[in-house]
Image (cartoon, rainbow, N blue to C red):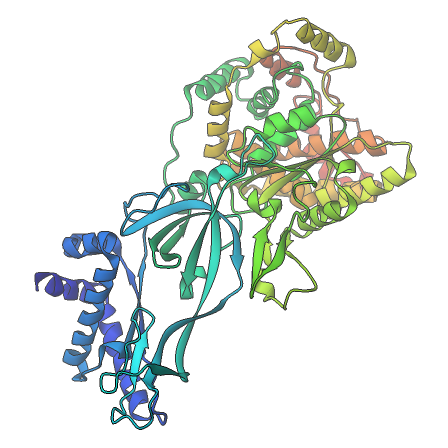
Length: 630
């Protein structure tokens, strides 16, 4: 009795008591005007505020976890009693249908994917790999005696939780009145363990769990997202009682405005060391971290343009905007795979294992299943697709379409029935990395490169960095057993990954100076070299500018962040299309094998640190008079 009294207090506290009264009054009016003999039941959907429930009626909260069916029965009976008291109407048990949901994930045992389920409620954490299209499930129906001569002329509504009994009078089987069926919508979904996405290998074979999501629980589900699901083991399947997306921690902190955690000590030391050497330079920290990407066989000054671009892409993966995708030209697979290891979530794929990168709609029996492809499975992370010539035209076209539109649309086979377009298309939340060693003397390759530049925004060049002599000497030294390159690793992967995870979702506001510089650079470039910059260059430059500010621990992208983004763009534009006759070409000459020395040498680049920057603002303000390009 105390549980019921406190439960009524809880229902009143969360305004569910008023909701029950209002719905019952509406149902009563409809019931009296209903012409058919087969009246549908009154349906309630209650979302439990679990923390408040535990505070007001702790015994019932414990019952929800340990004995959910008994808790459901008790609350169902209490609702019928409340209706009788509130509006003076006595309803039979089967005339009320209750959907019970949890608004938060309570502290319950977690089910291992290869263990037997415990009793009561438990949670499953994993990636939503596939889901079915919505279909109907039975809520309740009406049965009556199959013998028409039986004196028992009473029909009975049976819920999906009850067994059908024989006639109490004649003992014969009862038959269903199919037109009295009440149904709801549900889907089946497969949840895969997070180990399914192994960041450093191609594919890990795992076994998933199929869960039944009913009514509103499946309305917000997205393929490829990490979820925490509260489930109960029923006779035939796992049934969801609540579901919450497990967003990246950095994004959660931004959405809830939490204070970020402290950086690893090695990262703090790196910031202090760079500040002592370069003072308040707005570029030095990014150059330092870029030099630490992909340390191994090559000197720290190698691939500096590409490594800076990869670092900017990593710093954009866990925010609310579409991340920066990378097209790299040259032999740079080792660097890109090494950089992918720094992302909290990364997927390395080959077309032989993943035919449709977008995903696929398949048929299994009477159901259509929507299966996530690698573009969705790498959400809030990196998808490395490798060398472009080995990808194949169909695979490449789907990748290019997704990057260009920032949307992922599942591929539907002709044999499948028409599927609602709303559940076929998802926003692109992964950064796509691709490499290509194109032939500059091939018209066909250059034409395809032009198309890819329009899609990706700009290519990064593996050749920009230290010279060939320094590179060759370093590789020979490493082959002879010298670990000089490895000794320059000042940040281990875990610290680097933690740093990226903390800053990658930080909201950054564009300053007027930075935004104006990017727009004027774009207009000036398009005037002098119409084919050099694609239409989406402004958007890509803005994302690069924001990522640069993020890595520099600024929440406002300043003028110098825009200069850094433009410098990277100009390096590629000049290498591919030639320099402008009206301005100096960007120069990067750095052959040091020590990260701090790399930062010092990069500080001496004229475009970024001294000669051109003070004059850049005035030059771009007068682009319409001089048609200057930078």
